[in-house]
Length: 204
Image (cartoon, rainbow, N blue to C red; front, side):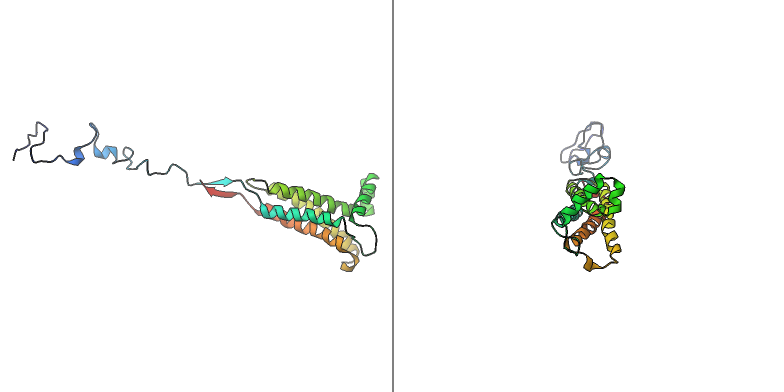
């Protein structure tokens, strides 16, 4: 067997070169870190580039929007129905009279009591619009929920006042009034849903 001459750097016959010596000239295996980035031992082709941190995503508030839409529909239905036990004006007629009283001044409107159907029907229209906006993608719908809450509380006061004046007797009212009550209840539920739903997050 031919012996290897240390000074020549050549490999003698029958001796195999150590695979660890087969590196780029001037770089040791430890410096290259294996098959990955120098000194890290990571393979850039196997390490994911994307971050796993959650990010806020845009989306609709379907339930909150649906409840506000139903509140607006209930207000529209009440326009075609009678509100009071005695035969008389339907909801549309009450709203028209409310506008007439408002033309004489806000104080006259409040004293006449016709602000109540106005608050319910106009509030239902606002809730309908807010419900449509809640179906649009957004990171959060809390602002819309706050507005819907204010409108719903006004509509709630508009139905509680006549109930209290009739000593909470449900027989004093007809179907149109109960649709008016549904406006405030559905609006409150939709407003709370939008307010309590925070941002939605997803991983990139």
